[in-house]
Length: 187
Image (tube, rainbow, N blue to C red; front, side, top):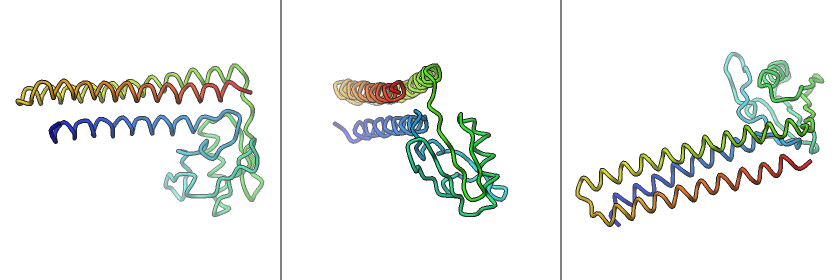
C-alpha cells in the first residue's frame, strides 16, 4: 500500500471517529431522568457581556440521581446562570436559593421518552449521513489516485477499506443509539 493510500484511509478514520465522538457528546446531553453534569454542557452564561460555558463560571455537582447543583464562583452570577438554564429550554426549572442553583430533574413521561428517542434517531441519521459524506469524498480521492496512475488493485483495496470503515462506524452509531434508547425507555 502506498503512502498516499495510507494517508487517505487514516484521514477517513480520523474524520469518522470525530463524527462518532460528536454523536457521543450529543447522547450525553440527553437526560433520561437521571441527573448528570453533561446535561448542562454547551450552555453559555452571560459573564460580564461574554458568552461563557457554564462549566467555567461554577461547579456542577450531582448530590443524588435526581438533582443538579450549580455553585457559581461568584454569587452575582446566579441570575445569569438561572436565565441561561431557562433560555436553554431543557425541560426543568432552576431554583435559586441565593447561594447556588438547584435543579430537580423530573422523570420524563413515556410520551416524552418516546419523543426523545425519536429526536435521537434523527440525530443518529444525521451522523450516518456525515459518515457517508466522508466515504463519498474518500472515494472521489481514490478515483483521482486511479486517474493519476495509481495501480488499479490498490485503488480497489482502498475503496474496500473505505467501505469497511464506513460500515464499522455506522454500526457503532447504531449500537450507541440502541444502548441510549434502552436507557431512556427503562423507567
